[in-house]
Picture 1 (cartoon, rainbow, N blue to C red):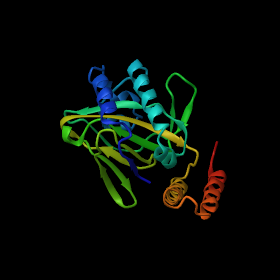
Picture 2: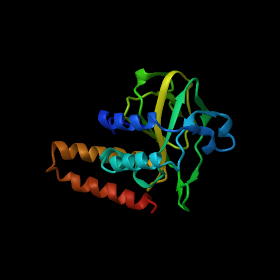
Picture 3: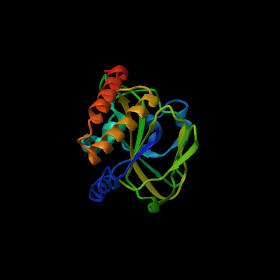
Picture 4: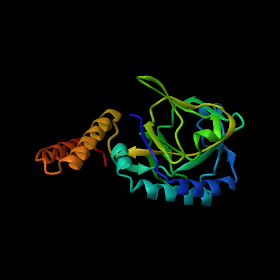
Length: 226
């Protein structure tokens, strides 16, 4: 399930993040890649233990915690702290699959990566190339979103970032361990949740809402892992 959540960050919030990142000290992004992915990864990255990475990461997680769409789509149990990357001057990340388990730096906490996420911090007109390409059952999905938009997609997906041939592409990237491991089951719950929200908005007195909400929570109770 690939979901785009527009305007997670406002234009002013994006501008504030950008101002801080423009002055940051970047390192080779290969330091956090797996053995095979290291040869495919050519970008810059903010060090995970940098104060700025933690500051911006906490801010993003605070915003996402208020997003009903994010909670419905991801059903987050654990979230790996946001990291930040920069693609420029031909930088790219060839086809790869994200590591299944990631340990939060400096802690014993491990996160199973059920859902991969990219929060775009650069507008499409600021760079050429840099599409996020995700392979799914319907072929390759090419994604290039507005600054402030968030993309969620299964971490099992083969994906890449195409070379940035002009300009600079800034983004946050991170993962979540969902309460529901199965992407198919998450899709069912998400669609059911959206239907409940739509009915609630148009006919809140509809007695079938109680039945639908009962189905949703009973499925979540059956499928969830805590």
